[in-house]
Image 1 (tube, rainbow, N blue to C red):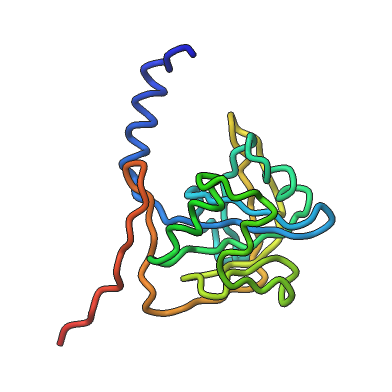
Image 2 (cartoon, helix red, strand yellow; image 1 turned 30 degrees about the horizontal axis):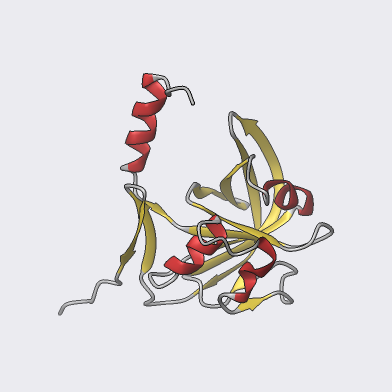
Length: 170
């Protein structure tokens, strides 16, 4: 395997130091259910409410997500590290069995929504752009579900870290 160019190596090192929320992107539809762990998500606008989601094109779930056209962005809570590993493919759990972990609602929105996610944003892919190794998906939001006081799971320096919800002081 050839060594990465210096600029690419430096960029990867810098991005490893950029803390990011951990999300499981899920879908269901004509090609069936699928999901993957991603850290590259953000809001785009609130008029209309839209999120940006970056998905690696080499992921087995990529083509299923884009063809189904509807997704849930499930922002993981502090205790979801094992679930994140399953959907990242790091635990060797077969794709078809990944939804056995966690409590999923498959019916309300037509895509799997993690019932105890910190936040779940459900919507449809309204635009996409291929750039390098990833597809950049624009998801127009149909529904949002939130849970309070669960803490968050973040990805930093190639590892998951749990952040507790800060207590309010008087």
